[in-house]
Image (cartoon, rainbow, N blue to C red; front, side):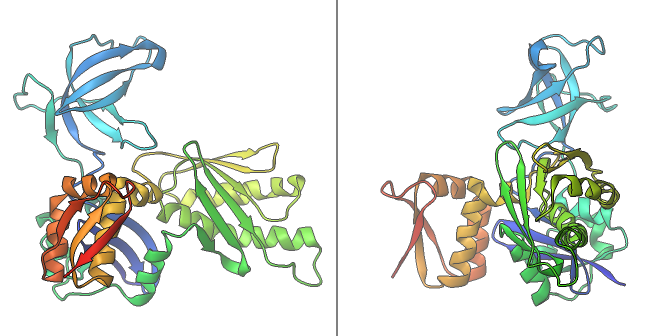
Length: 363
């Protein structure tokens, strides 16, 4: 079956969807003005040793900092020392960038902290993960952002997202997920972990309740794990299967471990807790989709999308400090919105509104 990497342009943001026919296989958001930093290479300075934390803080320049884990007795560093580092984990969940030391490039290096090279964009990451996928774009604006290394994979004709794919992408923002067999799952991100509660429909007649519930959970889990991948949920994940005794839940462990092998991040199933919750750890590298959508920048871009779709006559967006500050940090997103709607849009701070509340003014 033909695999397609679809690119859709929105103000300040591109949606990237890998598809086969009407099936969504992979997904990412690309915000050119706000790269997550993973893969970036810096000339850095050790700013503070933190033995109790097992590492050191490093100055990356221009107000950026990161944390460098250090193994005891291996490659000791001193405060003020310059070294080359690569970002291995984005800032997320209240924690800053994670970096690791690497061999410096052969070229002469500056004597102060600074960015040396950018890491791959989300588009480049997906293109590398799906090397056989041809690339389609929905607009000239999206086509202009395709890097030269990928242009030979792009189809020349413009191709908007099919309705089924657009719907599947929109559904990723919802907390509730429909699963096979009439099951559902509620996904609740917290600062410490991701909680997932599964619910099942009434058991089928002719089966014992536990047998029916076990089969329903087992058959629904592959779709749930695909949702975890599409939303890039990471860190500690606790899943509460539907309607199973704690003893019966143990029988899910081997199927779950086998299902997780399809995930390129190789999550680990640590077992069943005393409360009967399936405990999974998935590597934190890039921010999760819930984090991207709920952060100030994500809320600002959502406001522009709503204005573009539903407020064609708006002349001004008036908002609280949070939303206006986020818009001011990404002037290109506002310019994209103005270009697409063909009409100017002013931005005004309204101290009477809460941080992320906004409204529009019309002529």
